[in-house]
Amino acid sequence: MLAVMQRVVVVGAGVVGLSCAIRLAEAGHRVDVVARDLPLETTSTVAAALWYPYLALPQDLVTGWAGVSYAVFSELAGDGTGVRMLLGTEVMRGPTPDPWWREAVPDLRRIAPPTGYADGWEFVSPVADMPVYLGWLRARLEELGGTLTRAALEALPEPEGAVVVNCAGLGARGLVPDPTVRPVRGQVVVLDHVDVDRWWLDGAVPTYVVPRGDTVVVGGTEEPGDWHRTPRPETAEDVLARASALVPAVAGARIVAHRVGLRPARPSVRLEAVGRVVHCYGHGGAGMTLSWGCAADVAALVAEL
Image (cartoon, rainbow, N blue to C red; front, side, top):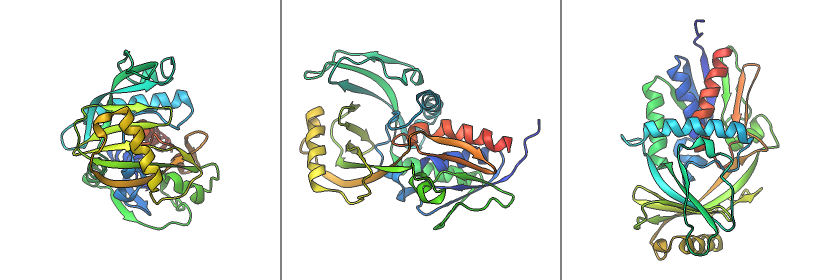
């Protein structure tokens, strides 16, 4: 069956919106991205950007999307994309079964946990230096003939012969509107480079240490319903104390920046077509992790339209 090329308007220029736009442009559609925030102003920029299914459901779909994304990131690693494949360790306070998303990673193996922990595993995960990666995504979209325009929207655009792809993230709360979308505040501290050659994660709090390029991102917090975008000094102190306990090498490192991101959480990721609008939002803390898998499904839905 011959595919029909269409004009597609993608709302949102974070990692999910840009990934969807690229897959649509690669399929031959004319793609225009419109967004209130340009890529380096989005929540995606704040993310530690460690591939890891987090605050996203349902489990079966998330595992599938995450697996597709993992494979794509494996191909993109290196070559100026800002993506690399990095071995890391997750530790647990008690005996823990394999993660529900186990099938999404090629190899996950149990380890003898460090002192103070009861269980642990390690696996190679994609890690993205988000400012670099978002710049690469934007350049790839423009190379394919797509456009990116800043626009303050009060509602989703009317299709008017086009297809609208809604990747507005937290903005979907007002644009759809969808009151089930809510923020989950995350605060991180960016440190100058220290001698850390792998990522570390203690999911109980959560606490993580993720080296990327010349910096190390340490976090974090999980604060549902909190819209406060200004870093809190007391939270930063707590984050640094937890990160230093997990990875002593980061203790005393020079602080480069404090950052806050509002994760777009929802009871489940919404990925469906309603008329000529395709919704793709509610990825919680897994936007990067699910981006290419969701983009493939979005492209398939647009092809059906």
